[in-house]
Image (cartoon, rainbow over all chains, first blue to last red; front, side, top):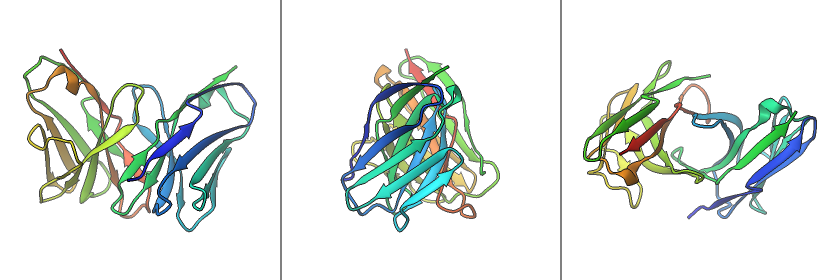
Length: 111
Length: 116
């Protein structure tokens, strides 16, 4: 059974700082690895999707990497902004579009 | 990107009543939709997979008679929480994949259910 863990659980940084969010998973036979953003009481916004055959994906200030052998993924946010404050979730995807979510990292970017 | 609409955004109900939550794919057809539940400060947990025209598939530990799922069309899945109790209070959220949009899953805005 896939288990997904995210570290740290919470993070507070000053505006402009570069930061890394960590995600680890137990079953390396994932179909893909996805990163989402969740604002309080709201739904999820898909940020990046890395297929199992890929090692990283980039979108704007976001870069996500995937290392299946070590069971790890990282989300790198460059030049953080207060608008980046949210909970970031990673999820391991299996066939059939089922996702196993981590518990999330609550990010606060201070102006 | 594709849009998944979920309604209502929040609902408060009395214990023992039933609550229906709707999930619609607005600009694509979804043969499969997924229902998740999220308790405060916990992760999203998959409850069931909703299949158009057939029975839903429930995850272990989820009572199918309590959480009724109907996927009668390619754009609508409903989750009905029957005889709701305070412990059913949670954030419910649906997702679907646009077959034309790659592997990304799109999520509704979620429904916060509070059972008094």
